[in-house]
Image (cartoon, rainbow, N blue to C red; front, side):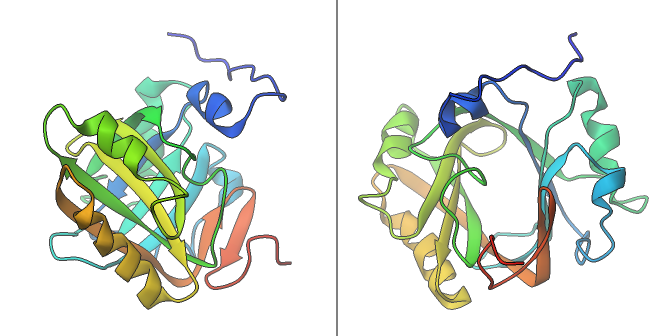
Amino acid sequence: METDDPVIDPSLGPIEKAARGRDVYVFYTETSNKVPSFDPDANPDYRFLADLEPCTGGWRWTAFSIIEPKDFLQLLEAAERITVAPDPPDETAKPGKYGQRVLRRTKHYRYFGFARLNVERRRVEEVLLAINDETTQGYSGSALVQGKFEILVELGGETPDEVCERLQALAEVPGVIQVEAARVTGDEYYYRPRKRRVGEPEDAA
């Protein structure tokens, strides 16, 4: 298996760059409050890490990361670095196709969160395309994934409550069977290359 970093043309747009990248979405349970102790220098393959608070029933994951492993055989080792035994990462999902925007690469809001969508068979791409800038308030990115659910969506808002309201509203999209959603919580989150304050613009010092 190739282990070198992919060479990505800087002239490509965010979706094209992401398609050539190595993103893996990792969900943790009983792994909350991980951002304060997270060391970016010791975890260069992490692009994003946040603690989460549920917006809907059924959400049981307490932390979420996006890892870019150089070798997918090393993914588990990378994901376990921020846990304490015997608490391994709970689930992983690999993006296969992106929506209009790419999670954590394009448009950002001061407050934001994520939803895992279960979708009717044969309607996955229809639902992916239906969630976009024009139809969905706070839309920041989405991806069709290989995992225990079909689509991951990132939405943002001006307040934490607004984030949850927008995530929950995804249940109204035709073809969506179930929505499991959570918002980023705590004082800070990590988004390469540094930790950032929840509620502040991402370009703030």
